[in-house]
Length: 410
Image (cartoon, rainbow, N blue to C red; front, top):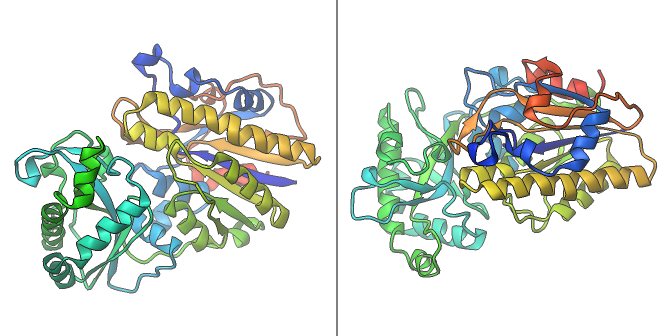
């Protein structure tokens, strides 16, 4: 028996008026997932505890069986682990996004946040900009004074680590939750260290705003990466062993550092796929091939698809629908076919980690639908994979205590 976890990041949603009052999952053409639902088990599960931020960090930690109320210290330390960064006592890790601020003559506080990803900036340009920023004499001196260093990534998602700082009282906001809103109310606040971070962000905007790369991007009709945004702060983290908890080994196929970091911390194999971007246009076929290779070595594989979440943050409803349909036709369908062709019995759990709402372009921690399919059984339930049908099945209020136990039939 093989075990497969499929996470469609942020694909669950609330009804959308422009879709006729139904959700993207209900509107999308997903015959494979609907077929598995009709023969499997439908239900809903809450992966984000109410007292913690609604996001992939808390939700995916929960899905893998690690109670975020016990283990969660912040998102950035999980992502840092993906690149082998282990925080020391007194270190604080931050996500350092490349972002786009409004092109108007005004203080940073009065500019809107137009993109949390600088228009999904290409990795090469993002690396060049963040490297140039931290090499600038004035900014480098300010960062050194703050105890700040950066670990660049080949995307908009960089990791910054600050030594000898205090996180108590600090309030940092996720930029993707405040798109098209004025930056001022969401800049770091609440503590002396937050003011240090805010000053670095203001200085970074001054240095990046008219960098030649950003002028090229504007000339090409693209969003400039004219700022950085610190958020997702956290201190050193340890997570329990997946093998000890469930008696299984495996790998995690994803394009985002968060999933690779969680994998590394719980003892699963982080799987990197060439051409996997975390965006709508990614290497779906490469992820399927990588998952099948993992299953030759292990009993378990997780495949994470980021695109539905990113499209929703970008306000791209057609993109979200396409991402959901491609997850169905280019990931779930081929995996089911390949496993069937080799005569392999399998159990597959498909779910969204959290909701990402078309109405707000932000995250929501309410329950999400899941389908659990076992190739050796036909439940005859007849339901489709959707939020509405998920509510007709079993409800699990704690994903950390439920998801993996369901998948492994414990």
